[in-house]
Image 1 (cartoon, one colour):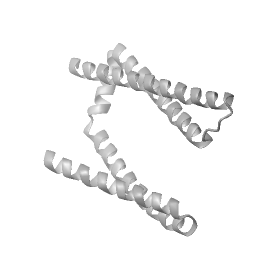
Image 2 (cartoon, rainbow, N blue to C red):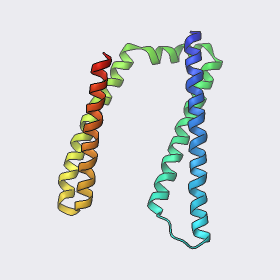
Image 3 (cartoon, rainbow, N blue to C red):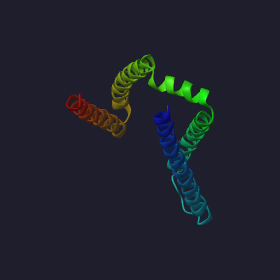
Image 4 (cartoon, rainbow, N blue to C red):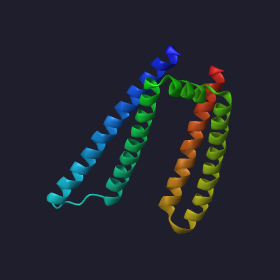
Length: 150
């Protein structure tokens, strides 16, 4: 259990670092926006809003994880429950199967989106096709990696 405690401490440190980085990025993005407004220069509201939303989501998730892992490190019963949850073969199988199924669903939906977009906007169509190709290359790279590893 001590080995798992050390692993959780390392994970907790990574979560804290990601939390701090997201806060810094959020402050920088909002600083850029404030500077642009004061200087009457235009910024892309979409880009700034998207970045703010992503950073806010990451901050929220990291706070939840930091609190959960910190509580587990302080309480042996919670640590044991976390150990069982993270090492349980059934949970791992469910995680792998759900990721595999959701990945297939995303590819199919992107294909349909590309077909629909082809009727309305060529740039959007080409972007979706580029995403599908990038996903295919990433999947092939992981398949190659795991075949060599196992």
